[in-house]
Image (cartoon, rainbow, N blue to C red):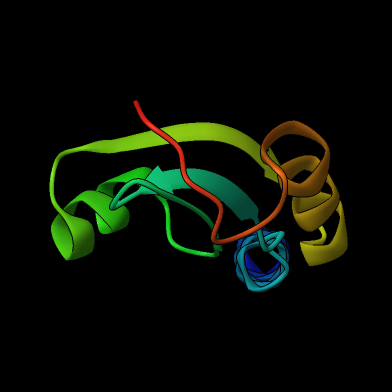
Length: 82
């Protein structure tokens, strides 16, 4: 019985640790007719900016998201449309 409890506690601690290390995502959007890089997910963007949102790409680093925005749209703040 002690072994089962110990294993259960171990699995719970591993699960909690894994969720603590969720990877941050930076996403390139077209919002309000402008390119924007944000950590918000698509649903959060729609709540904050309205339903006219396009999601283009998502990265684990802010600089990669900015590079994508620069290469494909001319940079953050540049005009865009969905």
